[in-house]
Length: 96
Picture 1 (cartoon, helix red, strand yellow):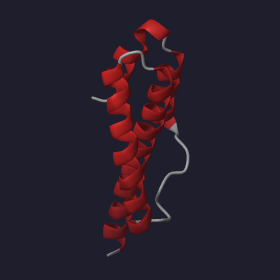
Picture 2 (tube, one colour):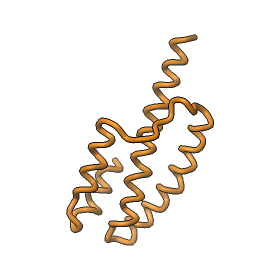
Picture 3 (cartoon, one colour):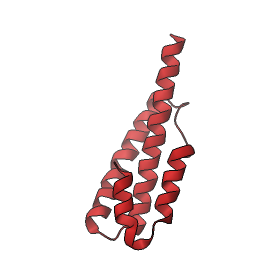
Picture 4 (tube, one colour):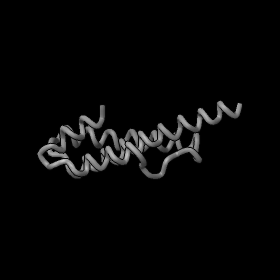
């Protein structure tokens, strides 16, 4: 039972990190994207991730990440550093 709980918490932690990355990346895209379709996608991601993160918070409140760490933080920083003309492609690549 304890091992199963640790697995659930690990899953919730990883899911929350991925969701937080998606949310922060999409919020950045709302500010920086050049293509209207990319901004539309970013709005959809913000809406979906806000709902998903709230549901995850209700499911596993102690396992939910409040800040990005490790590879997720590095990926967001690369997105922040993208040149204006490269931002849309960089954002879309980060979504896959």
